[in-house]
Amino acid sequence: MPTGSTRESGYSRADVLITPRQVGQPGAVIELKTFDPERDGSPEAALDRAMAQIDERDYAAELRAHGAGPVHAYAAVFDRKRAHVRVRSEP
Image 1 (cartoon, rainbow, N blue to C red):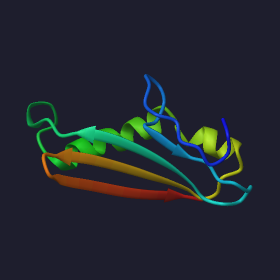
Image 2 (image 1 turned 45 degrees about the vertical axis):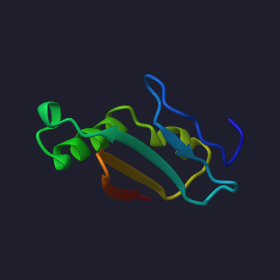
Image 3 (image 1 turned 135 degrees about the vertical axis):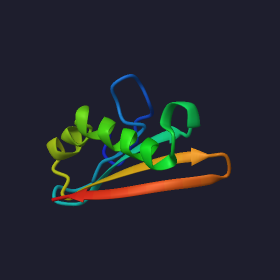
Image 4 (image 1 turned 90 degrees about the vertical axis):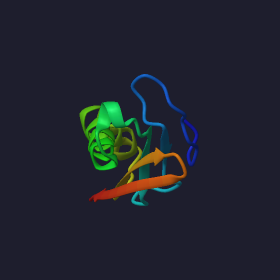
């Protein structure tokens, strides 16, 4: 994967990965979800689901392999015109 590029969604990939240009620079994982009240119950539950997906599928592993540090994880849930975002960083 070229440095600095993003990779779009697939069935075991994050929606967006931002790799650093240099080792030791930060990277980011972005997981996007749409809010479905029947499935999620609340936007917070949808954010929990998105963060769990980032963790369970270890999307940050590719960034760590490229020397990213820290890795920032972003979960974004869209509810019509509202966006709910949660951010977490790891060293």
